[in-house]
Length: 473
Image (cartoon, rainbow, N blue to C red; front, side):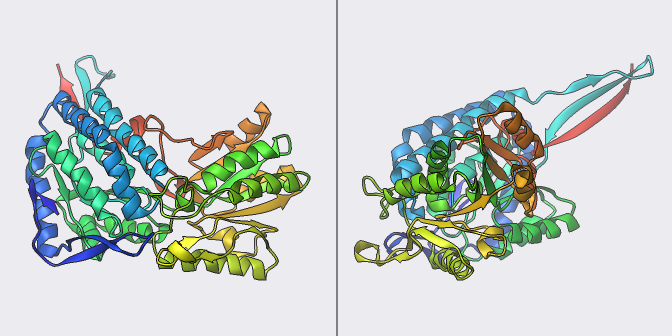
């Protein structure tokens, strides 16, 4: 743990394991209530000074952290692959993506502008400024254990807030490595604080109820997000949440089904399907289903499953045994109700895979709305394909979910893509694009997929309060 500029160790801890091998990588301290209070107190004390620093100074520190992160890219990526499981190539890409947030918000720190607002009275002026909200309690997930840290801490620090971070209990080592970077970059004591914990309930409760914490930012499941949001609302906290998703992918009749299969094969199996924006319902017109499935199956069959540190691996392990059990139950339910397994559909445990949490990349056809996988977030390497006949019903089918994070559209017609963009109730839409994310673009969802936005100008606004002065002159 890192509290008030000091590393705290030498106390009871918990093990961090490699999901590919089951072996223990390291142990980290398991924080207690006194540690939680100390971290919040440190952030609260540091805020009084940090909020008064110039935007240029905050930008300089963020820029230095970006430099260090870039220099340590390989080291960070290898740690991520050992701790979280994704193939090394994907880990390298995530470190680069995560570093982008530090660079972007180093620049945005200098662009937090105020306003002078005209008044109806000749002798009155309104002056508006934007101040940092205060201490931020940040909770990050295991599936993107580095980029989710920078996507939250980058704007918070740029705005002049101080932070207490609780990373996922499965991936605290990546968080520790990032805080070593923040320390080396020269952030003052108490500005950034790290709590590692095996049971997150006490930390979440403190972030929601402690009056010194003015803002909660959370990325995780919708179920946990609802609980945290309800508790935070009792204390009138500022809240932003990026929650679950159940992304539809709409392959319109005018689209090339082979081209669509190529793109969706890449985004569906990215990070073993353990992404909130992963396409979970793939709608293909019945005239093109055979061509689409043929190309998708050929591409998925070439994916190698194994330890992400090995060359050429495309599918690593899932994060834990519970993840395996969840997705296998969805597959078995679908098959029992008539779905066909075009590829995969089994746990992989032979040879070197025996000690890890591996599941074969899977394609299901004949998926219908009665199946669990049609409604539930999957978070695994399962591609459910749904055939449709009437294009006019497609957007309504896609919107028929409580989630509203991401959606994908394949079409060669401008009028079709615009109709889909305007009609889909999702916060992020990839139009012939499997990577509709960037530090420069707003990221976030509608409905049960969360509130608020991360990245872009909207990202730093989440950490700012608006203050107005009426002046007689």
